[in-house]
Image (cartoon, rainbow, N blue to C red; front, side, top):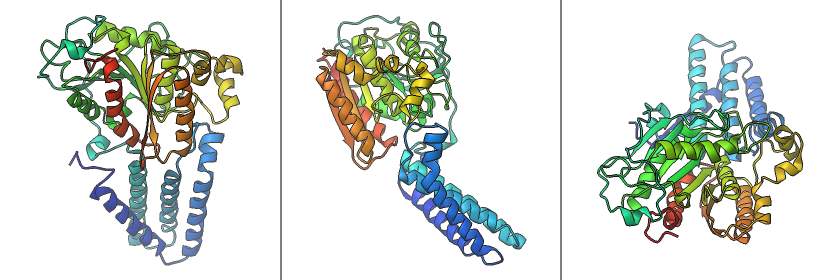
Amino acid sequence: MGGLSLVDGWLPIALLAVGGLAMFGLLTRWGRGAVATVVVAVLVAALVFAGLNLLVVDVLDLVPEPLPRQVLLWTALGLGGVVLALGSLVATRPGRKVVALVCGLLVVVSAAAQINVYFEQYPTLGALAGGDERSFAGGHGAPSRSMSTPVASRWTGPATGTSSIETAPIPGTVSGFTGRDAQLYLPAAYNSPNAPLLPVLVLVAGQPGGPQDWVVGGTLQALMDEVAQRHGGLAPVTVVVDPNGADGNNTMCMDSDIAKADTYLSVDVPRWIEANLGVDSNHAHWAFGGWSFGGTCALQMATRHPDLYPNFVDMAGEREPAISADRTQTIQIAFHGDTAAFDALTPLTLLAERKYPDVWGYFACGGDEEEVGEWQTEVSTAAQRAGMTVRTQVVPGQGHSWGVPHASLPPAMDFLGPRLGLTAAAR
């Protein structure tokens, strides 16, 4: 049952049908105030659909980008169902009250299921239920060393271990920043006898969100196991880090008045990885990647620290870091209104001022993400002009959802394979 899909197959369709029947049941309530209840429900739904983005983007600054129309629609329908259910509690028999509450709950569950179909945050019932976290017990014994040769030429396998997902805190020793526990993907090769020193991939999730999102919505273990299968058992040790500290925080992966998130990612994180995991510490074989907020962060790391992260994967990132849809407010919050200080650290500024002939980057976005697609074109073009080796991918039929990383992370690792050393033709 845990493997039952929540994003395709029969279950999402069944939940949609059940929700439709429940909504019909609420709309066919007869009795005093029924018409007024329907009118109020329609008005609430319309107000939510028309005004939710204004509230969460412009008023509350919860997210810097508008919610997709499909998400607005299902949210509006769900809240409309709640109003209908509450209205059915007035001047009705006890049995009708129970039916109304059940129908209201089913409408909310159905709407939430359709929102999940869009974002693919919980791909299966098992992912929704969650699982036990396994704490990192220490590396495989070999200390990190800088390897001049690709791992593909040093190790032929086979991988007799099994891959694992483990958790570990990465302290902000230098930055003073406190992030949530990192999620570690350790490939089967890493957990095998005579394990090789593997390359490293650092990942960041979207915002709001955290490292666990890459494990659940991102199906990290399955994706990276696929990478290993495509490369003779080899995949990078993958460390999903938290540069925000909480779902509601947004450091923009910068050193600013908010936090020293850049120092955390460029000093504390790589030092911890090299000291604790037993990996190839040659940063020519390292990459930084992420989705949404994390994609923006990946490009920031590559442009600000090409010596540490000369390879990156930007999946549906923004054109520049942002806290608010209002750029002036972002700069005020993070840099005391100093626009020049903010601009000096943004990828587009750095790409215009510097050359990056030794950096490779992979950009991906959903085919239904019109604005993100425009950003990808602008930023990837700037990257190419700055001398980067770039590849872009548009994932058909996907919006701003985990479907983009699902479709793009393995081919991104194929593209970066020679750089990471997963294939013998490393540069």
